[in-house]
Image (cartoon, rainbow, N blue to C red; front, side, top):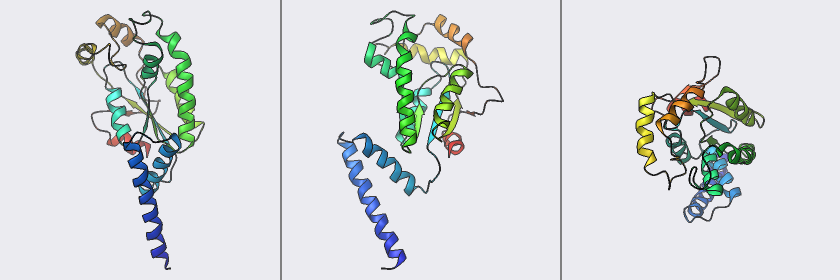
Length: 221
């Protein structure tokens, strides 16, 4: 058997295996180890031999973090969303548990998510953290989560004016009881959170999201 024929045969086997895994995924029967296998095969077929990627985001409510995260998820990234986990375990903020007690419930979940992110990155899976990361200290903690397992970490900043954010939040508030990513915010809440938000400075490596994922993907490749 010639080398070229051997390469073609191996590629055929890999593509058949990927096809079978994708069919299992469509049936909703995919095991976590099989999802990792899909990621590794796709990285191989794309010619990627570099480290796994961790995408972090800095942005206030309404800045478009979940939209970006879902677009990356569609491209094969694992989307890790602490807010969804809080919703699953504790219900709706302000209805099922008191406003002002969110951080208490979120803290252990962030620890769980960080462990899961480390495991996924160590297995070669690309991950996007669907979470706001309002302060530099928070961003540094999550950057270290990725760097500790050898991942390439990219911080994406999603800037928006108060008026832009408020218009999006008003629309999103209408589905607050059904969507864990539509937590209810008043305009006063947004102003208060905006005062706490620390945009990435020039000495904090980041990519500015301006409607296209291309710079995000290129920076993390």
